[in-house]
Image (cartoon, rainbow, N blue to C red; front, top):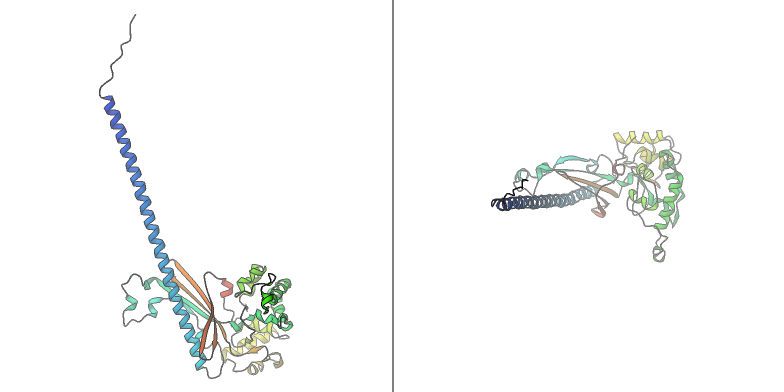
Length: 340
């Protein structure tokens, strides 16, 4: 019977195991260090991107503040220079600024447009904007008179809602809440039933107005601090037609065509264009405006900042009533002035 011989363990095996464990530990250490390094690099890259985006946003905001001041200066000069006291679409404020490189606005004599300072970023900065006459639109504030619904204004908006194919019950909702929001009594204003007065058309959603209605009325309506008249020199045909009871759309188009060659210096001059001049009265219409919306858009690389402001123009004085920064309704920013 044969017996099995057992080989004695080699003295080199423990050393091989130690070397294998050391190699594995080294590989794990390298992987761990690489992970930490990659994480650190990503965090640093992210911090740089955040800092760069924030710097661009702040720069854009300051540039838009300057653009607002520039627009106010144009409106102020217009209030001082106008000889016939009219506001019309031939004046400098009505010309929109299409997107243009910021460096084109800087002085070439001082080589500002070629600044080496990286913080300027003038080569990648683009500015655009426009000024819109808010009295070219129907003012929802007109719906309230002596703490009640004004029937004349309600009839005007009923015509507009009918033209746009919108439900009249939403106009009733807006009218009711406008009366509640316009409550002047302090004790009433503290009542929870009082609606909060919106500043813009998009904020009508606070009252439960549908987004479809808001989008459709945005180019034709506005919300101003006080009741206003329609400026026949800047209003669109739909607004003029809806504001004058008994007026045909063809008559409104005739007004638009007549002012394209010569703006109106008085409401009576605009009324002469119509077959029934009595439909265009000075109680509802005017040839000048006090309220304007200033919009600005600044783009630096992929960063876009938009801002709009409502300004009140008086002779020799233009003051900002409110400012808003962010994204806005496209239809609300659409220019309905002069549309046929």
